[in-house]
Amino acid sequence: MALRTAEKSDASSIAAISIEVWIGTYLKHGVSGIFADFALSEFTTSKVLEQIQNPDEFILVSDNNQGIDGFIRVSPARIAPVSGWWGMEISTFYVQPRHHGKGIGRRLLAAALEHCRDQGADVVWLMTNAENTSAIKFYLAKGFEFIGETHFQIDDQKYLNNVYALHFS
Image (cartoon, rainbow, N blue to C red):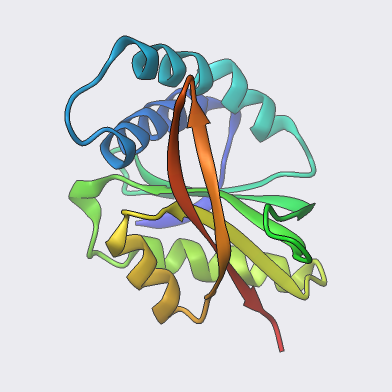
């Protein structure tokens, strides 16, 4: 398993992982048309390619020599959806579920945090589904603190997301 900066040729693999992980996180009881349409329009090769080509975005992939099994995307400083918070955002962080527990997420996060420190960040923040207990446990173990809540909304349905931040000392 090697970590490397995302390349243009990775766009379709990153889009596919995004669909897989997002659907597995948010849709526990089946896939409705509304959610399928959202996933298929949001996680496209062309949108991922735009992110890869954007010099302000930092995208790192985990490549296991047979393909990508996870990635992390760090975006420049943004205002968090919690009053009074801003900093670099871990905007996407997905590891294929069958590869959990292999250290991939730990290594991706460590490299992303090193990038944030190198950029002079004081704070990095992220959001995760409030029901994603394994991710929450992981973030807390890595020193993130709960700073508030927000909602992800699609159509008329809202999903509670927790917001976490990590201060660099």
